[in-house]
Amino acid sequence: MTTDDLTTPLGHEAKPKPLWLRYRLPFTGTQAFAAVLGLFLLAFVGFAVFNDDPLGGEPMMRLAIPPLTKPETPKAATAAPAAEAPKAREAAKPPAPPASEQRTVNIIDGSSGAQRSVTIPAGDSETPAANATPALMAGINPQLLESSRYGMIPVMAGGLKPSRVYAAGSDALRAKAATMPSVAIVIGGLGIGAAKTTDAIMKLPGSVTLAFTPYGTDPGKLVERARAQGHEVLLQLPLEPFDYPDNDPGPQTLLTTLAPEQNLDRLTWHMSRFQGYVGFANFMGARFLANDGAMQPLIKEAAKRGLAYFDDGSSARSLAAPLSAGQAVPFAKADATIDATPNAAEIDRALAQLETLAKQRGFAVGSASALPLSIERIGTWAKALESHGVLLVPLTMAMAKSKSN
Image (cartoon, rainbow, N blue to C red; front, side, top):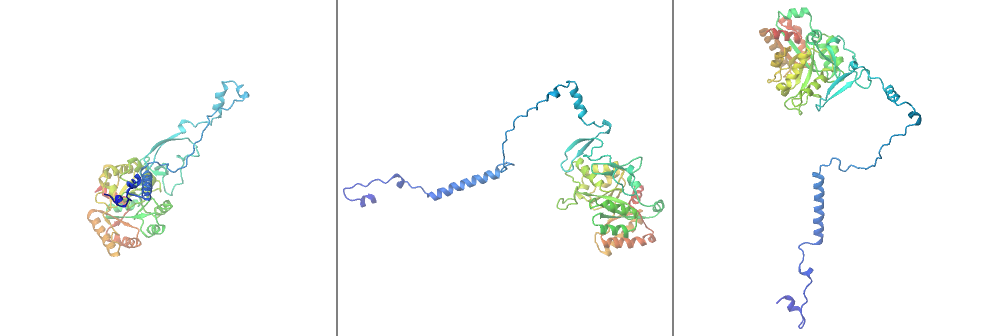
């Protein structure tokens, strides 16, 4: 017996319930609508995230372009003899320069490594004037320069090498250095900050070698001033450190991950920044210096262009010494960083150690930055150095002693 049997009047049968009342869904219409809307939103988000359409959302338009039709030829033109038409077209063309005056240049992109050949006709005002000679810095031998896509870069010519032609010091100083213990000092990081660079140029003796970075508004003017004061000059190259790019030496850094052609393109940019340097010096670069595949092209380029190489001694794993010896590149490595601890007592102690090493070995090399304290202590030390039986010399003289030893 059901509940309907008890509530139904006698003599009347209970009517069956409609189907939609007997079978009720476990959710309401509102819940069903919310579920459908959620599925739609989920599908939309999935399409937006996983669909790879670089032009998605960009407006597009389809245009019907009618086929081009040749313009009608005037009757007067058709009257001309057919044989004269090619001659008229040839006369309208600008004369091509002789093949001997054309130059094909292979351009390598330092960022992507892409290569392309470009033919540059003589006198083309819209292409770089590859044969144009820019204004030279004072005291620069034009025979020791060649043009590149970035500017003038050093080269050997007629048996002359930049490492010898631009070496500082007189013949009398060289003769004296051959018989006395000698110390060379290299001050790096110059060219950025005119004030500190000028202090190093003017306050330090001319026998102190100065290393310039390729950055700065006009490093050529500062280099020119340094050479006028008798300083020997190096070009500091930004090389990849182990913690690159967190520790970034600067734009156009030479990297172990680039192809040799890309690094040589970047090297060309650095070499074009100024003139008159005797060689390269590293700026940072612990990872690069320890990589044989990266270092070999750099040292070979130094040998090809008659340049020296200076290692600041910051990397114990540097391959610069054996690679330079293999290419007969003049080489020196810093025996100590003078201002590793930048206080007067430690700087004086490092300078005294260089004196002792020079007396034991015949020469010693130190490196320092252009800190005001470093410049002041080195200047004071240099004034009394010769009275201690030791000579202050440019870096190339220490390299010559290193080679003879």
